[in-house]
Image 1 (tube, rainbow, N blue to C red):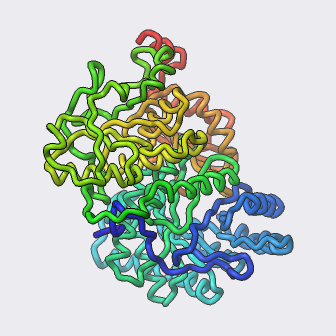
Image 2: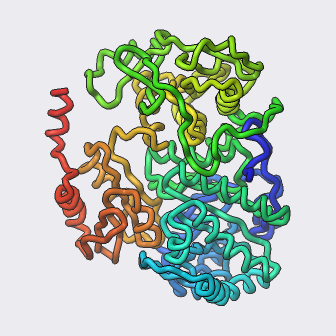
Image 3: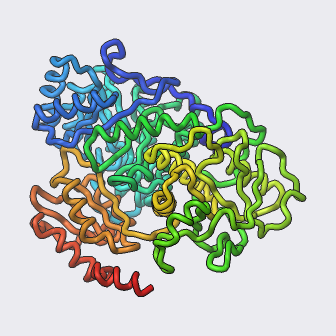
Length: 599
């Protein structure tokens, strides 16, 4: 199976058009080779018509082309009529998308008023109780019949009214039935979506698209690749558009890095027709990041130079780090083999940061580029065995070649494999410097796309960031990319949803409060979820979870297991700290600082 024609050459995936609203009156067409559509979501209560209208107008002013509003109940869905009517009265014709979880009746009501409905197969017709049950083939088919019975009325209504659908699976909300048959896997996510797509196709309804979202960029990339490969295998008329997004990415630099890794790497491979960058921030900021990210893709993807080789040197559907021998970078650090991915800096960066670094600080340079025994190669030329002395030679891509970095490093790995070499590879975020220096926010996105895409392929034993010219900033960016890509853990990791009308507390305020109490807990992963839609599932690989259970009440989790219920919000952060302490993961902040100084 293949998810793209070549990992070395950019071709936008050919998809059918999905019409959302009337294109002659503000609607959009997604797919069909059209420009990628930017979208976002409201954070206010859906019953607050004035707030929803104002937030929508703010998003439109920022350049948003699709606006999603949650509809948790039939009452909320009915109020979409008032929101849409007020928007149209104000000459705002942006298409509105209703976000539906759990309530088929709410979806049917919403479809009367909005241009598109998003449903989640994991909870649209299935309950989720984390129950373990074996299904015979007959029982499984019976369940599919029940799902068709629940989903068909929405398909028929959307077909009648000319509405679009998004079939959007989330890593955190697969049904118990799917979990028991396929596990919590990319395959399970794909199968869940395809079940619903088949129901739509049986009714000759095709105005839909897919999404495969996860808070883990590496999982998200695998899911989308597998989905597209499966669609390709099913036939040319399964060419439905794709919505890209990393869910629960959080806020600030970490959220932008996670989104750039997941969304950017897939865009560079020609996948994706509409995108959302999910931030635990004010929604218009998502559009700014969308725009900045989309602007980088033509610079990072290879659309100019055809590469004859189209074979993959990595398994695109299951992560496995490329095998290399372990080598010494210097007297203090090794790379390759089972070693962690190392952080290399330039001499200029070393001179800036070295005086401030303590010997055992977590964030520190591990080698200086100019001092390394590294062989620079141009993979655009056919390499020969005599070009590389041995497998223990560190190699990298030579600056100034004609290929952009992602293509160049993938091709370098392919050439090494052809020669029977498995040398460790030093990744660079850029190999061209015509537009330097970069604005910090752009340097961050480019580095995250390039380095993150290659690490997700399993390529890379050390990394070098040069697009960000600030010494301390480039060093921190390198470590943040490694953490977001799941390669290293040097600080607390947070999974935080971006807020919507379902959210039961102020996510930005609470996230800041939790970070203030826990950001010293290196290696601990904490999920902050506004409601239960994706909460328990997305927390499956988190150590602890803070989830809105009811207005003013918080539930606390260990992994995906609820431990404490209905805690008053005023007490919940400290109760979370108590839970972390009970499980032996807590250290006092002053102890952490003292330990760092002692090291």
